[in-house]
Length: 519
Image: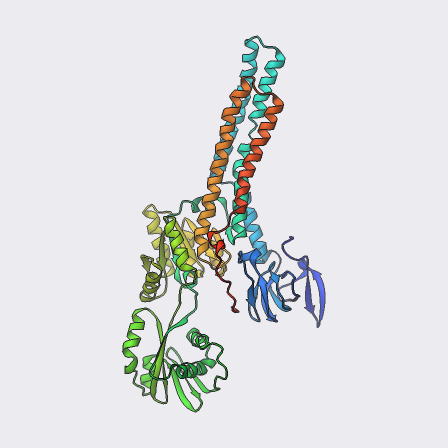
């Protein structure tokens, strides 16, 4: 496979050796130098770089990578030297699976192609009959054998169904190839045809329309806000909770955060810690009350935040409330454009989430999605999709988690986000290789463009025969010119299909910035 290196530099027994790619095993550590293609899927164990993942995800800008980040085989290492521990090798790598999916899709037959095959099975004997009738008609009219044979052969040559046979496969290869280049992997041709008919898209919320991790969206300080942020971030240094990470991220690269001591996590409530000799508590109102702190000064603000579905962390120090943080899983920057693009295509967006109804409603209002449901379990999502299909809608489901798999399987078209779980990707008929929701509308665009090209090709192939056969039968076309015309028809069909290779998702004209921070 030319898309990946033929060998890899592997560290074994304290020394480096270059081995064939087939000899790399899971757990091996590969050394990747600047400018080289990464040979395996794995985790960076040392070093930092920028990876060009355009081959895999279609992302146009390099993505920053550092220790602990995942990299994929076939991507190009940037300016740094990195060591990667192999997690997937050979046919199990993301790149190999992409190649297999594309090959399977391009090798399949669309329903319309099967119809063409049936037509061709009738078309060939009919043309042979027309050629025989042409010969007999010319002989009956008193023409010589040479003229009669020439007319009959011209009919056979001009009616050669090459263009008819090429019309669908050429468009499918070009369309699925263009989609793969943009980061849209189509598992089979039936899925591509159904995608063009979709009128309803059901999104999972967390990780699909949103970032999938909480961010601080509001801060209420009863005194000095910078001091509130500094103390809260310092106390959270010992916590692995997602909300703690959100507060630390909000504090940014604040230098000289004070050391934390006597860190204690209180299950389901928050934490306490000593910071600069002060007892700091962060968590729920119940935690503060249990420590003898009255959260009443923050009650009205907290109530408003909770009505929005935001998570709240209150902060107190030495028995007095200092303020509060509101955290929420915010929409991806590209999501509003993605929703607008679907509406412009006449597609109705839905959002089903396992998150609370309040949080789901808040995100739906921000994005202009009128149809949504919160607190949905996996079986609830699948049932709602079945109900929509029963109403006569053609439904696509977009998700990234194990909990989305039942709905993906129930949908007419399942679309898995490539940053999600293997279960979601195995269930879906289409995989998006980067978590950009704008690719959903782009999926429908390439499906429509491919089907339109197939219809154009079939029209011209049939029109060519409808015009060419009578002209040949009447003796106006010599076999040599008929052969040239037949070849031209095939070239024109292939040329029309190749126009799809220049297709790009609409957003590529104004690409969103790549995620530069380490994941």
